[in-house]
Structure formats: C-alpha cells, structure tokens
Length: 357
DNA sequence: AAAGCGGGGTC
DNA sequence: GACCCAGCTTT
Image (cartoon, rainbow, N blue to C red; front, top):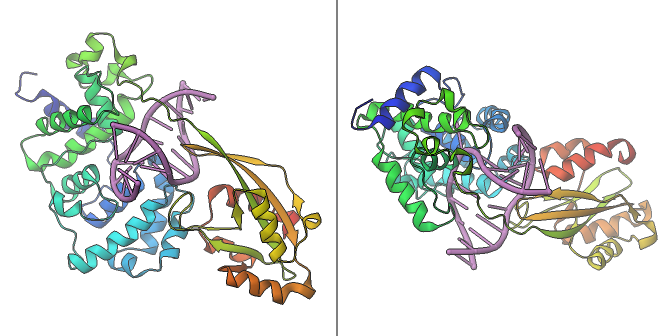
C-alpha cells in the first residue's frame, strides 16, 4: 500500500473487518468509556467483562457514582485489584460533577486532571467518545510499535517511552471520524494478533511492512523488562468470632496493600498478633493456628498465617468495647458480601465457611 | 528514574 | 514459575 500512512490505513481497514465490535463499553457515552478504561488498566478484558455490567448497573451515571459512599464503590471493585483505581474513580466522579458540571470534558488535558486518568486513558476517552485526535500508548501499542518498527529500546527507559509517544502521534489517521476504529484497532491488533507469545503474523495487516518480521526478530521484541525482586512478607490474620457467630473486621488504611478494603485484624509480626488477641480476652492457648497460605502480588509474596479464636460470652461486652475503640466491628457472616474484602481473605472465609459458621 | 500497587491468564 | 495485561501515582 503506497499511501503516506500505510500503518493507519491498514489498521482501520483491518479493525473494521476483523476487530472486536461487541464489547459492552464500545459506546459513545464518555462515562462508560472512562469506567471501562479504568477497569482495563493492567487488567484483561475477560476479567473486566465480569465486573463492568455489575458496576454500571449500580452506578449508571457519573452523578450516582459521585454520590455513593466509598465503601459501596470498593465493594463492587473487590477482587479486581489495584484498589487505588476504585478510590480515584470515586474521586474523579466527584471532580466531574463539581468542576465540570457533571459533563465529561473532551480535552485530553482536562481529562488528565481527573484522579486516576493519565495520558493514555485520557487519549482513549478522547478518541472513543469524542473522535479526538489523540493517541493511546498502552502495553499492546508498545508491543505493536516495537515490532513493526523493530525498536529495541528498553521499555523502562523514559526517553524510549517518550520516543514511542512521538511515534504513536505521528501515526494517527488524518480523519477524526476514523479515531475510534483506529484506536480500537491498536488494542485489537495487540490483543488478538500481535500477541506477546506466538503472534499470528500470517493474519497481521502489517505483515509485509513489519521490520521485526523482516529481520526475524519477532520473538525478541519488545525487550523484556527486568523483573522486580519479590520479597516475602509474613502476615498474620486474627479471625475472631463472638458468641453470636459474628466475625471481627476493620477498615484498612487508605494507602498500601488492599488500601480501603475491609479485613480481619492483620499484622506483620507475631507479637502484635498476640497483643491484639490479648486485648480481646484471648490467651494464646485459645488461638487455633491454621495452615499458612501464600498469595502473590506483583512485588510481594505474602505468607499468611490465620489464627482462629472464639470469644467467650462472659467477656463479650468488655472486649467489644475494646474492639470498637480500635475501629473494629462485628459482622454477621451472611453480611460479609457487603464488604470489599481482599481476594485471599474472601477465598479463605469461603473455604472455612462450614468449620467457622 | 524508580517504587508501589492485585489479581488473573498464559505458556 | 516467568511474564504480562486497555497504567497511574507517589517518592
């Protein structure tokens, strides 16, 4: 193809014929586009398909989301990970209502002032909802560009990243009306054809202009990131029941692992765990240590040891006062679903349901 | 520039 | 087990 921009011409044509057209967030409503883009940050499409409809049903507009309590937002986000996304989403909804009169702005720079919206997400909203001339640059796009143009820079290098932005901008189609299909095409090509492993080059619209293919370097591009060292972090859970069969929960601090979610009392050190139990009237002999479980995050390997205990009825009142002083409270097992719990805790409680409740 | 932040899929 | 995914924020 001898057009000035064979890349965008091919991509748009390919997307219209072979791309994805029935994803639930392929709509013009900027609220829907924004919500999907936030959910899709570092999260695969198949996972988001589970969460997106539930979320949209509960919060159909930016106004309903802005007016909701944070706990309800986090509860619908539980299990999706990267919980700062949910906190930022909630804040951003309030920003849209308070600073933009409840209407999403269409300028990329305005969108970037919203919490949790960086350049790529802002560009995606611009392109899909407003046909604006802005480029995304996510993992899919980086992979496609590194291969088609045989770029072997270090993906973690800021200067290389900047050059990818510039290249991506230079490839945009000239017609604004083409922006949605073009942007979707970037994502679709990376997700379904130019895959990380075993790319389907025989189906690729770029096959005959792809430099990596020409140089037989598909497998080595893009360059791998250096893996972060994963440290092991011991954690101890105190799973305490009172005579009513309720379980003790607390809200986690806003920052850090599982920020803003609800959890059983959780400690990094054993003596802190015993000290907390003691305040609740539980001596160490009455703590039932359970087999440890591991849970892997990107940067940590959690080794979690659950301790289960029962509070005697004679002491319940006094120890409940102690609990509420520490911002802890009792929850009936059937109401646990109302709280955003870390995935491993939700899994553990489900598995121990019969023994505990 | 580097670190922090989950959970799941794939091979 | 290694690597990555429709990245952003904080330090």
